Length: 292
Ligand SMILES: Cc1cc2nc3c(=O)[nH]c(=O)nc-3n(C[C@H](O)[C@H](O)[C@H](O)COP(=O)(O)OP(=O)(O)OC[C@H]3O[C@@H](n4cnc5c(N)ncnc54)[C@H](O)[C@@H]3O)c2cc1C
Image (cartoon, rainbow, N blue to C red; front, side, top):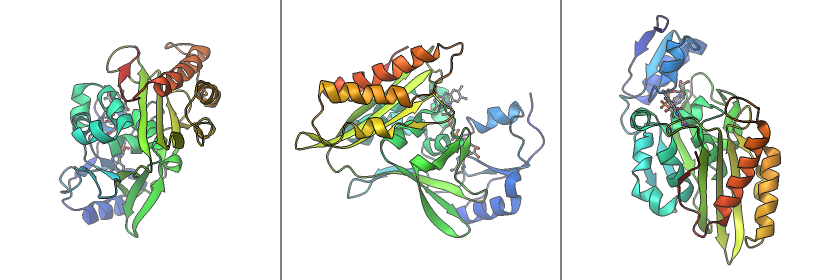
């Protein structure tokens, strides 16, 4: 199917893009990698009157670490850049585990992490990863910049906290306070598929104890699930079989899956529990694994 008729603009600066969005109102949409927006337009689930393509805006295709260890991912940083990133492989085990299991190579060549966060698909992998890592999104609009914690950025299925004239310019992962570990595991029916179940676990340890933890779930609810209670169960003590089991039970309780052609609700809940145990039980917690 062809999309409905729309106007197309390809501004060369952020200020121009923001002013186009401002004037376009609710009928204007940002185009980044186009890997979610274009299929939706072709299916006519989305029919924007104005598409504002941000691909010609310079300086947004980065991912870099600040001197203090904060990681910044620009709005035009593609999945493939993160998949091939030595920085992630050496310092961001959860992101390094997730990057190769996003979609397929063709989608990874164009799609962006920030676009994935904005799309807010309950089956989007990056939203869980950034939530578990305690990240935030920096938005820029006519009034300037503001920071939105990832835990409140997704406001519902396919809904985010941006105003119609704001652009998400970067995602930010805070610097670790301790030693990082964790991972991302995804159950998919076949390679390249969306998650039947995805689990992101990020921990930091210091002096043998867990000092910070985040657990978030993909595909087992109406939107990304921040399993905060499960994560809290890990903090303050060394990892142990008991603390891992407790966190896994709480994460499974936080899941709200539906029975469908991919599996029963009980099966999906069981997989959440299994993945939490598996990630936390690994010695280094860094390996990416497909559990298809
Ligand atoms: C076949 C296929 C398989 C896929 N499999 C997976 C998968 O397994 N896991 C997964 O997580 N994803 C998957 N995806 C989605 C893919 O990861 C997309 O790249 C991603 O969801 C959106 O990123 P994008 O840059 O392509 O955004 P676009 O499609 O350009 O935009 C998506 C939405 O976000 C908005 N948006 C984008 N960027 C910004 C911004 N900077 N500021 C404000 N709003 C913005 C757009 O207006 C639009 O509403 C798949 C897609 C396809 C086509």
